[in-house]
Image (cartoon, rainbow, N blue to C red):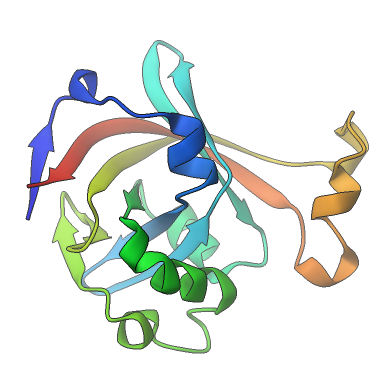
Length: 168
């Protein structure tokens, strides 16, 4: 069961949490939502507020929900949910029911959606977004992550962390 905690009480390695454990970006509510897996992102302070930056390819179905809503969640899970995260990262909600396919249980709180199986959830309010532009990339790493068949570049969302929930 999830319960609210203070942001100041968090202790974890963001490089481990984001880059190795992965997370689900979810937006929408009881009348409709979508989720996708991410393994990119940053955390810090922006305009004096605690934020996360999440990156979503412009071709992803979840983008429609994040753009439409004021809030989105980032949900982290233990290793036992890795198959569910793998599925949510490789299948589109346009083509399948991710909840049915993964067995994850939607949980609606604060006007947005997360999952009962999550062990850590950030409820985020959108502050700012921008598109990654290949002509502005300095590092040639772009060629590793963007090929014509991968579905477009990413849009970055700055989300103010407005609430944090942790599992009991």
